[in-house]
Length: 345
Image 1 (tube, one colour):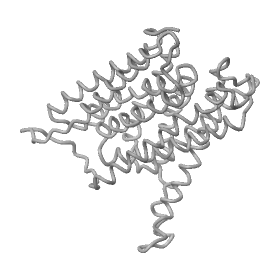
Image 2: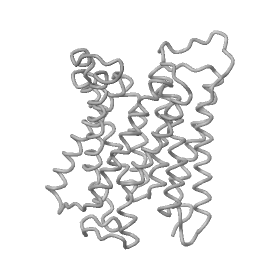
Image 3: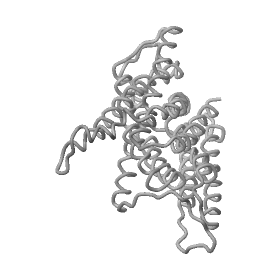
Image 4: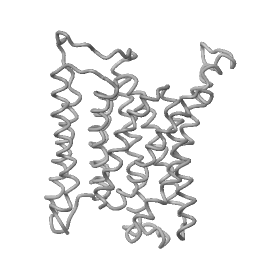
């Protein structure tokens, strides 16, 4: 059951770049809409949980979840920026591959995921073999055809030209942000398991993993929305400072809080909430490494959506390479999902 729950983030996160691209707006509009929508859903979940259970918070759980929300917001702002520069079909696979490499290495090395007393090394080696399949698949998806194809009509979107260093910085900082998102929320459970902290019985991650996952949703969304609103204020007022500063009246013409795209993108917040909540439940039941790897198969939906819905046209060789890559990613995701079946106990 929890493996199926772990696939919900893949579907929701796969739909997310398609939704925000269709709605439009700048990255600042998109991050406002996504985080405000997510925060409103988290308040509804909090009120519901307070009404139906003996719900409680612990300082370590609250602030770790808050910090994970901050990490996500940093990574997501930069991912939205990458969508504008490279397009969804290119940016999403690259972002996903980097996340899988860093997060899985961290979760296995620090949190001890993919370990079984009965199968001390087999589970670990199979997990990493599956990750390698996914990463190779990402490289196939990101393949760029060098020679122009006769009769090929490229997409009509004009993308900004930036330096390679700028692109590398976007993905490097964004991946570190996503590592914080996936890893920090798991930290209280790890400390509790090893006897470093005491948690209230109501949110014991071993006996009440589902409630433990729900507990993190509100503080995580709070961290997301605070960073997003601070970023929006910075982008709004930045032209008023520096060498080429303008008046507040001029800067106010580009006020993201007055632009309709910021509020339309709250639809994306609802889509993201489905992923944000279920990934917490998946991590609590499946472990960080498995939950992350399952969720990152979102590139299948995002890449196909970029090609067929957003019309990000590709030459025949690139298109074939993308299909091969998607097959490898799917295979790797299935293997990771079945690890506990292959190596029980």
